[in-house]
Image (tube, rainbow, N blue to C red; front, side):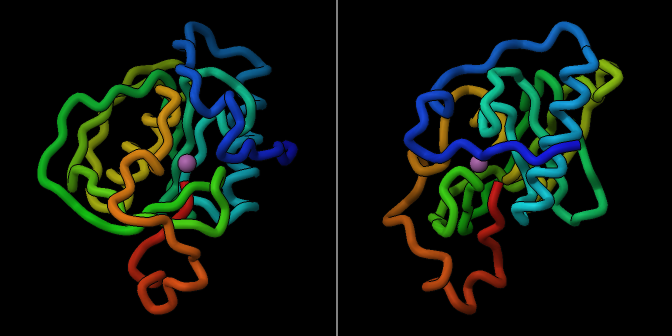
Length: 166
Ligand code: NI
């Protein structure tokens, strides 16, 4: 495994829609391993392939540090409720902003064996799924932020409640 360079906000690749994955290959498997390593090293809870320079519909999420998920060609098929909270992104380090997301999502995707699965998620996991699937469509959370982006160091106590980077 190897760390990959995280592309930062302003890099054109983060604005491009990603391509569907048709086949698992050794290269793609290595990309997924590297994405996990890069995400954990950066202290994030999610990472999408374009953030490391690959325009493939692949993202990884682990909101607890012990529950790694790979989503290939993810599709959000149901949403319910609403949550509002600080959200951050590894492509915009040190910043957060308030974003409204569904409280609950149901997602359909392929796992790394290219087997289809469905999963329901709440709270931070639901937020991360929305955030990462947006990346695969070339969208960043900054366009959804209500109010101003803030510096994480100014969040102080509030950072306890959220502001995970994805
Ligand atoms: Ni992000």
